[in-house]
Image 1 (cartoon, rainbow, N blue to C red):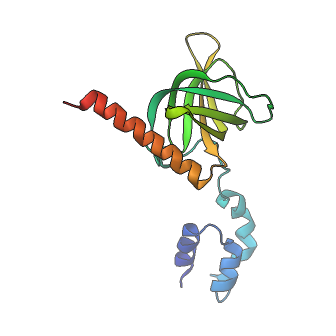
Image 2 (cartoon, rainbow, N blue to C red):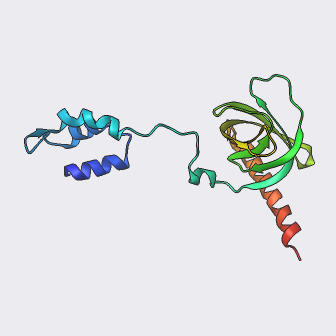
Image 3 (cartoon, rainbow, N blue to C red):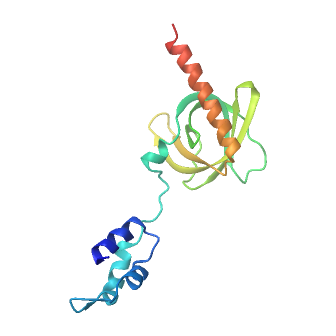
Length: 178
């Protein structure tokens, strides 16, 4: 395998250290009299994986269907021991996360307890990680919170998907039925 093929294969599988790749695959470390390993340390910071970001990729954001519904909701820091009051408001909801407008400012990376009251008085409790908080121009001291659900069990996520599909069916029958 040529050096170019080895590097291409490495770039497709970034979990393999390049130095180990050279040591395993190259019969010798010299190409045209140049020791590849001697100059490798210069490339390490350049080739390092980018740091993780809190902003999900476009693919992550679109993995689940989103719908905007009005629901009773309570968001509070996960460390809060007293259950807060449910307030009815517009929520952009998917099985992956939530977006809503608040008067409280939460910091990115904060973990919040999220309680939603679904139809038929079904209480749904989960945790969200705050991805970002954007100020809203009007009214003052209002923010748009973007968060993703964390620590969801498979059953909880499936329950969330079922309610979102129910909301979608209701919306379609209300607006598009004959």
